[in-house]
Image (cartoon, rainbow, N blue to C red; front, side):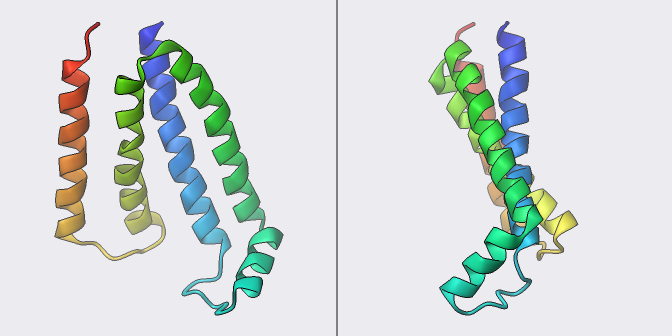
Length: 122
């Protein structure tokens, strides 16, 4: 059961990252709307923004199941892997700039999550 919960936790992280990317994709490139009202008008009329919100909601519902089966000290550090996934997909899918500093930061996150996972008792 713990393996299923871990797999579902990673799936929740992927859903959250996909939500971020969908919402970003659904907004005007380069912040074309300088005013708040224009940004929100575009957000509320964008199917990709709505998809991102739906993915967040699905992730939150599944996360409740994960938390009911895993120690929070194991589950929550997995959330930080979302930063790694989102940075990678932002570079690949959104064409965001590549940086070795970002790679170093993501590497530190992965190392930290790995250390925390090793410390959790079975």
